[in-house]
Image (tube, rainbow, N blue to C red):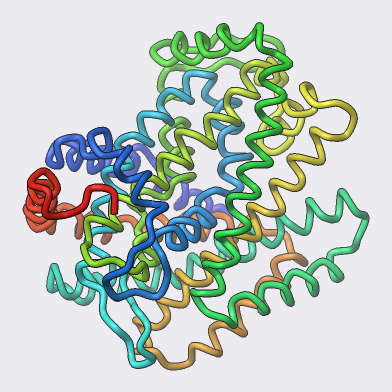
Length: 449
């Protein structure tokens, strides 16, 4: 059974799904006339604006930080290094391409989430792929499928996997046993999620900027200490993007196909564009137009893949750690240790791992809860929250190979109905985006409100 699940996960995340995700992003980029390039500056300005009109539970910024809490995670530390270790430096180029087209996908799914959102019985906002599949596409069973896959996947990749990673990192750095760490982490999680999306957004709005700033500062110090290698490091990425990478040091070598495969796969895993998770929190934002929040959400992919992932890639490249034969967190730790004195490199990666993982636990609880709410029409939410806290503890106590593979399968299954919705609702998306752009150009909408 374990072997079957592993093989099925490998099939689900095979070239066909990567091409589907990348192809959808490319097609949306064309249909939206490269909106991610033309309006990036506007979107970044809009992110920090104070929306005064429109329904919603949280601000533009709070929504983005919650989405980033889910996406800026282990993928940025372990995912990038794995891509380089298995695909060579050229994999980073394909990760960048994935991020650029993924911005159009993130814009599109967030637009639809806001347009088709609804107010639940508690007066809170509910939205996401399940709602635009039901109300926009008029195919309710697809919405149900997405919600089922999302609710299940949340307990894996968003809960137990993150809790396990946190327990290992904390145990190695402090010597605490997994039981103590599990109780502490479960309690902390419960205290946050009991306050709902507003408290999750408040914590994310503090935690995400803090952890990204610390990680960025540490990476900048490493890069400055190896500034003479920066040019050659960047050159390596572009040189190997269209060729294979020969074996060197402990690096076993990689073909061009491997570079593309791992760059695209890890890029999509990191920014979650097309998976349908981030639109769930985008729907909760206070806004008076779907395009506004869609533009804000779009910047999440830019910040995650084009900024944070690039930081990790540059550190690995300029220090030469990519040739060591290591992979995952071990490779990132080695790279940072090469550029920071004493134990600071290891400490930085440990702190990054813990904060990134914990923030992901909080954000994915909201994703899973909203999927659960859709399936059971708002009933038994407290049961879901208590179960979430319990599984955080369980995740710190067990080995998770099967959970990883099951989560991969569920994440892939989430993407399929979401991509169907994006393709068949793209006409509405393009029409309303065009109208919004014309209003901006005519001055009837304040471009930087």
